[in-house]
Image (cartoon, rainbow, N blue to C red):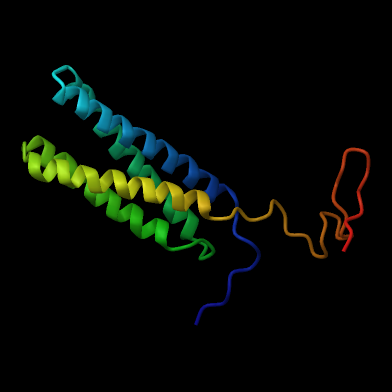
Length: 157
């Protein structure tokens, strides 16, 4: 049996998770726009669609490492890790289906992939960030007072 984690979870992995999910969502929405542009007759968009897919794949692998950092000390939620792992597999399948010209699979998986990315984005922004510091008795100095530039201010209880 493992002991409970000591202290609060660090903030930086959750901030990185928010950043990577936001970037991933922007890239996924750009993919949709580029695919629509290609289908609308701008055939040069296909090369941009391919390049953006490679950037999206890179970001999802980076996000996988970030999800490990969120979970690693055992303090963060588990869902970012398994959902990002699933998204990674889906991105690889999406790229494979695209190169194979299996458009039925490619379009269907693309819709599911963008939906999963957007759900991950919302979930990442709903995880509350831990406090910047964990004071023993209320404030950074342990007095229950909040720091202010002109001195501490008492908080009514």
